[in-house]
Length: 447
Image (cartoon, rainbow, N blue to C red; front, top):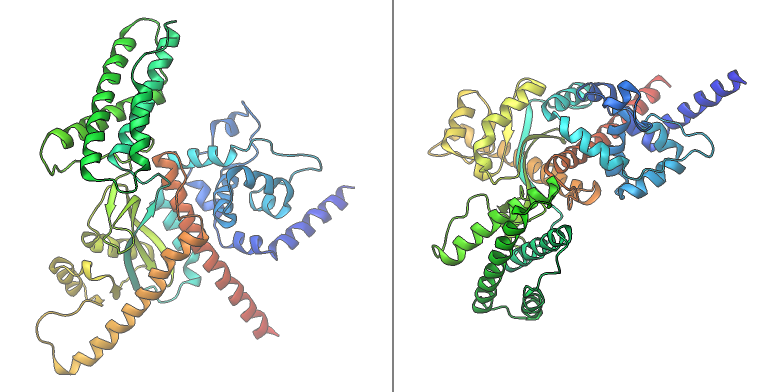
């Protein structure tokens, strides 16, 4: 019986290696990646609930999320019924055994996000993928924004959302103190806001008037909140206290905008009460002038992308070229050619590339030697073509096929984890195809 089970498991492993997930599994160094993240306490002590996955299995869950593009609940349902997905995560369910906790992907995303070291993981990946990456001396650079899943923010929407939150909190305090419900003009302001939202043409005059009305209502609600919170017998969770602090900051920003300078520069402007770390990123696109999410400056080598900088605050990507070349040298060694957008072509960047003998696609300043004009023009065209097709195309590929179009994570660490593993999965799928082609070529040569 033992020999039969051993034979059955070997047969499963052999069958798994020939599936699409098995081929993808070979392209990811799970052991090296899991070594950068400490094991959860429950796995070490054996206490608490049963641990279905180890750290490698948790990483496998993150990758399967982006491969399948499904919700966390559907992902667990698929794992329960698909033996390939079970082997991908390092487990094998017995007949009749099921994982009932649909929050496992969310828990692992939160845990990995706390300990995520992108630099260490990217070094592991670059070292493992080097045999399948050609032309490592050529690098490409560009920035994009991975949008967060939030409603498009307007001042009136934000203020009304804040009013709803503080009003609900006040009702909770009154219930704790065993007082009657508040007689504040909540329904009146709700009607005012809904009538404004129904208007097809929202004039500036109407918007300004409603904004001032909501500011006054929010101020009274916050005052009442302070009075109720000062009484003994009221308590509030840490999450709600953080949310209330965000609302107070939002009130100050909107008050200064309404009653202060005409065009104030609001520092660290809040555009979402649930995600106060999100900032408006001005992109200047024809379709989307402003995007809300994480701005990422990427390095790409032979179609494989690496994160050079990920920030939720707006930054000028033109200042990142030196750091990007440093990352390229750290991962792959010598850099001889570098291609980037026109915004990177500053005098400082040009000087650095000239001093380090790095050929760029920047349009040269001043006169050139006649013998080098045609040669440099051909090189710039080749670099621009590669950047404009492969690098720019990778942005759309990741957003459309690897669950990075709208990031539905709940906080900053999980959102960063979501973006990192989405890019990792896109890279691994490319590497897996190259590994498959190389194996097929070796097999045909041997035959």
